[in-house]
Amino acid sequence: MSHCIDLTHQRFGRLVVEKRADTVARNGNVCWLCLCDCGERVVVEGYALRKGITRSCGCLRREVSRHNAQHNESFINAQGGALVDQNGIGYSSLIRSKRNRSGVIGVSFDKKSGTYVARLMYHGRYVLNRATHSFAEAVELRRQAEQQYFKAQELQN
Image 1 (spheres, rainbow, N blue to C red):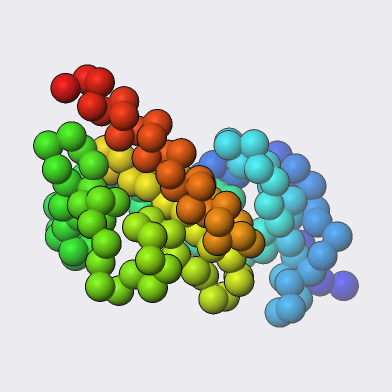
Image 2: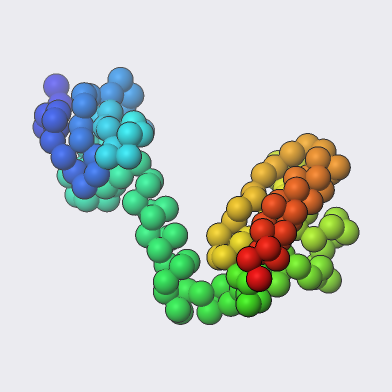
């Protein structure tokens, strides 16, 4: 019989262990069902909890990445420095690049999922990032977002 350390009710970063999970890791380690501070539940290997390898459901990594994308100058420069006009609208949202294959600014085809994606970045964040199976629907989503955000900007000026 293997030795198992009971981690029930212990906190590891943003995770609180609720109970032992029914699953066992491929290497034989015990897994635990944990509740993250954000409300998500996740099954984590006990070793990863105890050694600090896993500290959240993934929300911590997303927050750090979002912060880096918005505040870390080196990170921003490495991304090619998204150019923005005086209204906070990214030039990539206004000018059709030579890489654009759909013919519509802000609409692209994702080969992996087989969907068309409509995007619009406004003041450094995506206000539209939706996938659809219809090219016409993606174009319409983009057009509606342009009307909503670009018209609002014109009214403020």
